Amino acid sequence: MELKQFTIFLSLFSLIGMGTVTVAQDDEDYLNIGGAVRYNVVSQHYEADATATSHYATWDTWRLNVSARYSDVTLNFEYRFYPTFNTHFIKQGWLGYDFSDDLNMQLGVTQVPFGNLMYNSHSWWFMSGYYVGLEDDFNFGVKFDYDLSDRLNIMAAYFRQQEPAGPAHNVAPYSGPGAGTYSYNVIPDAGGTLTGAPASIRELNQFNVRLGYTLASGVEAGVSAQMQGLYNSVLDDIEYGHAFAAHFAGSFGNWSTKAQFINYDYAAKNDEGDPMDRVQMGAYGDPYYGDGVAARANILSLGVGHGIDVDWGPISNIMPYVDYALMTKDGQLEVDGQMFDFEDSHMLVPGFLITAGNIWTYVDFAMGKNHPWLTNNFGTGMGAGQLDDHGRPIPVDDLDWNLRFNINIGYYF
Image (tube, rainbow, N blue to C red; front, side, top):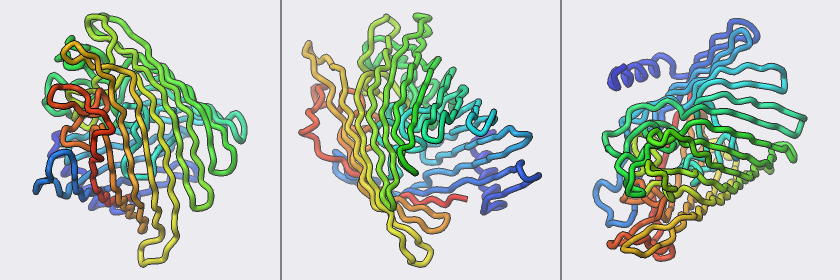
């Protein structure tokens, strides 16, 4: 289906059903159809002086959600369209089956069981783990979810490959399998931008295990492990990297806390068999261009929110929050025979969520240092960091905070 036809179809669908459509066949079988429409109002203040185009409004997302159950088999499907990025793709699409009240299986495009689920942030933005493919990640495979007891849950999964990709921008040699997806994935570096030699790599074969323990109602702590394969088609070889996470998420009255630590190593090699300090990644139709992502790093994140019940017309709740993430990297960049360490990345998002019926509005003051989305040089920062005129990483302490004031208004039906 052409992009224009797809857009018209979705627009007509929204006019037909401005609310969730539910068809019940009996007490157990059902069909639910819903979705969301979201808009962004943006004011950017990055390295360069602001211009007239630094302040704008855009149609963020249109999405279609379908969930169903028939003969004990469930379906969960979500397709998203992003006009700003001129792309569209599936976020999730899986078939589920309950073997018992304690054991469930999901087959298809499903969320990777790693760290805090569903999200590791309070804001409209994700935390830094998302931007390196380790948060709210979706891949194609099979996942089992088992409650060993009232408190202990274990998830185990095998993913053959990344989720299906939609259209990607024509930015060769950076584009490739994975660029047009919801989740960030490792994609080929055909031009050898990161190491001087091409890297014909893609994700293949991934294994995940996640343990979650309920300390009290609404409070969970746990650990996760991931072994991920990167297949190099030139070497015809798979190198396996790893990722580990420790997470905590809790609701205490109107307070919400999310904390997480991640250690990862993508263990990537280019087409000459040399180890890579950076890998190329992409999503939403755009890759990270020349800087890529550090192949080895630690990520520490912490977020706190406090909900306040109000009775202001349609507004029922306001939740102020603060989310922060620090990414420390293990890698070096050679410039004129000298080696320079990769610089850290920081992300700080204070803001608040306004709930008014089906409308959720996020008001965020997103700030970043070496953050690929908070810069005039999109896609740079998660690798070596911002560079000076000689190509050397600028010490992070010498960088000013880049700011994006963002209001995201979403109607969910």
